[in-house]
Image (cartoon, rainbow, N blue to C red; front, side, top):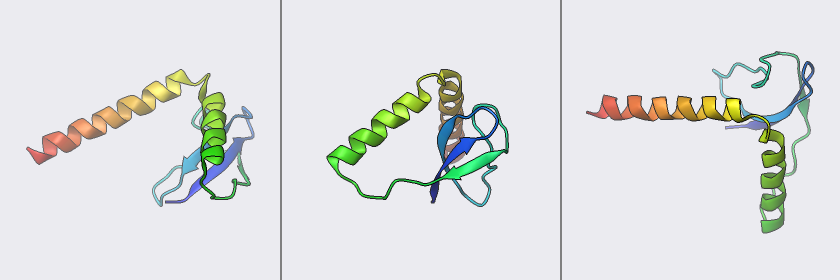
Length: 87
């Protein structure tokens, strides 16, 4: 699954998006489709790069508790549906 970095042309927020064939590519904050694909950091994993990436993600999402809550609710709903399907 490719992960791309984007910047919204409408609200100027930066975010990462996992892009699947069914993904609607739009800003998760304002839902604008006016996005600019950013250059992603090189895929090297070390303690330093993980720490830097985690800090950057926390800064980007610090003001987005509504979005975070929405995604959490979606994940919980999905897990509940999977459990009900198994029974």
